[in-house]
Length: 67
Image 1 (cartoon, helix red, strand yellow):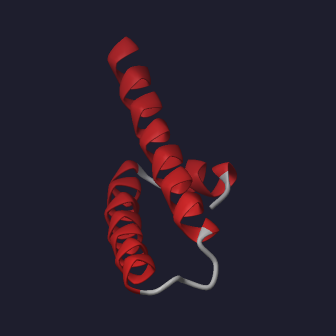
Image 2 (image 1 turned 180 degrees about the horizontal axis):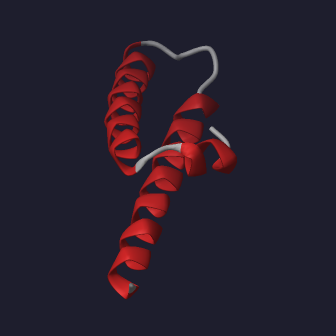
């Protein structure tokens, strides 16, 4: 997920997307624990996407608090 895509989402959509990505991360971790997944770098990518989403939420909260 690119930052430009994240900026287009509303705050509610960001929260929903974080939930989806966390579920996806959990599934990937379980699949990797059972047997090696084809591309283990996907786990890292999902973790970074979650961090990007959380960062954008934090930015928006800080911006609304300063107003």
